[in-house]
Image 1 (spheres, helix red, strand yellow):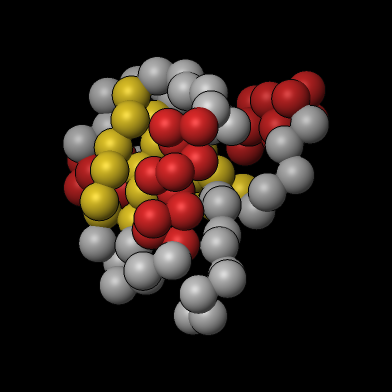
Image 2 (image 1 turned 120 degrees about the horizontal axis):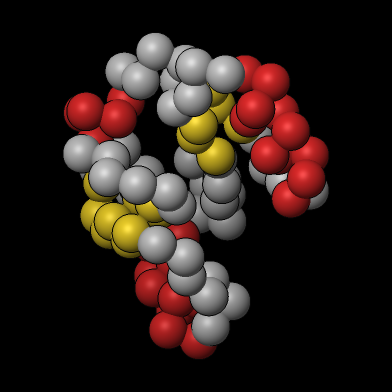
Amino acid sequence: MPKDKFEMLALFNSDKPEAVKNFVTKLGITMPILSDEHNFAGPKYGLTGVPETFIIDKQGIVREKFIGPAAWDSPQYVTMLMKYINE
C-alpha cells in the first residue's frame, strides 16, 4: 500500500441489517461499511461497546484501540494517525 493511502472502514456487528442501514443513513456515514451480522469479529477483537476504534497498521497488526467517541480531528489524534500513515 502506498504511504499516502489511508482507508477508513466501519464495521457493524448487528444481526439487523435494516437497523445498520438506518443508522448509517441518519449519521451520513460515507465510508465503506462492513457487516458482521453473525458477530465473528467481535470476540476476536474483544469488542466491548459502541463506538470502538482500532488502528490497524499496513501489516494488519492492531496498534491502537479506543473505546468511546474521540475527536479525531484534534492535534493529538491527527499526529498519531499521521505516524501510522507515514510508516
